[in-house]
Length: 461
Image 1 (spheres, one colour):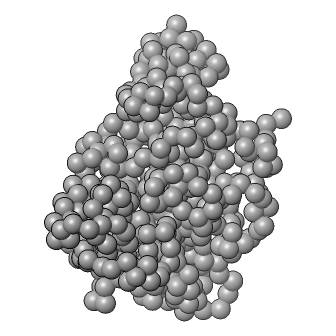
Image 2 (cartoon, rainbow, N blue to C red):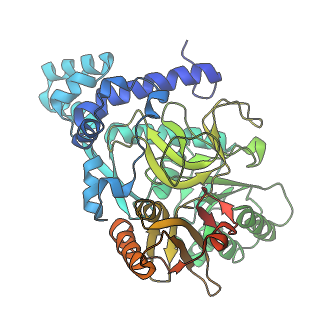
C-alpha cells in the first residue's frame, strides 16, 4: 500500500525525495532544458550523477540573475522545458504512455491532447522579487497544483464546509492562483472580490466567510474596516509574517470578530514556487511552513557565498513532479532559521518544513518608485574586488517609509575614491540598481556593526 503524503517517516521521506530528484533530473531537466544542459556542461558534470538530494548540494544554487543577467524578465523563458511528443514517449510513466498509445490508435487528436497535457506549457503565474518573471505550468501541473491545494486545506485544519473570502488581488500570481485551486481541490466555496476593503466588506455581507485570506502587509488595514464577522474562524496571512505583523493582525482580527475561537495562520509561496505552503492549525503557526514531500525539496545556502550549509541561511527550492518551468536549486531570496523533515510537534506529520522564514529578506525595496535591489548581487560584486578589504551590507527601513540599503566598505590600500566608484559600477552591473549609500569606513567601525544576521556580512537593522 502506498504511503499517504503526510504519513512518511523521516527515512521514507528521504528515500522518496532521492527517487524524485533523480527522476526529475533524468526524465525532465536533462533531456528538455537547454539551460541546464549548458549549465551541466559549464560545471563539467553529467546529469546522471545527480541521483539524490545530497547530490544536489554539489550544484551551485542559482537565481534570477544567473538566468537573465541583464534583468530582462523575457530571459526567464529559458527555464521552460522544451518537451514534445518524442519527449513524452521517453519520460511518461508506463500506465500514462500505454493509455496515450491506445488513444493514438482510436483518435489521433485525443492522443495529442494527452501529450500536450503532459508537455505543453499553457498557464503562467508571475513570481520573483528582484524581477517579476513568468513561471510556466502544463495542464498536468495544474492538476498537481489543485491536489497540493487540497493538502494545504488539510494542513490548515479546514474542510469543504469552510467558506473562503480572499482579499488577494485577482491576478496571475502564485498566491491568487494557488488559493483558487486550494478551494477548488477541497470543494469549498470561495469568493475573490479583489483587494479593496469596501469590496471585501460587501462580499462578506453576501456570503459570511469562515476563512479570510489577506496579504500580510494589508491585513490590519482591511480587518479594521470590517466588523461583525461572527462566522470567521480562520485568518490567513498571505506572505510569511514577522512576529510583529502576526501580533498586529491577530489583535485586528479579534476586533473584527469579537468573542470566539479564531486562528491566525500564515501561507506563503517563495519566489519561483507554484504552490502555497501553510502552517498547521494544531501548532498555531509555531512549527513553520509545511511543504509537500513529493513536490518540494528544501535546502539552505549561505546568502553571501551561495554554498550549501546547515542551519539558517537562504532557502533554496527544487521542484519535483512538475514539467512547466525547471526550478532546480532555486535561490528564493527568503531567509530561514532552518529546514527539517522531522515530524511536526503539532500535527505529527513528517513533512518538509521551513522554520523561521523571513520573506524576501535578501531583496530590498529602494525608495517609493518600486525599484528593488538584490543584496546577493551586491555581495557578489563586493566579494570579487581585490581593492576592498572588508564590507558590510545593512538593510533597513527609512523613517519616512520605504527602505534603504547602506553598503560600508574598507579600502585595501590604494585610491579609496576610485575603489568606491568601481564598486558602484560593479553593483549596478550585477544588481541592476544602486544602493542608497556607499560609505567608506574604517575596519573597527565596520566590525562593530550588529544586526539580525542573514550571513556574516549581510545584516538587517
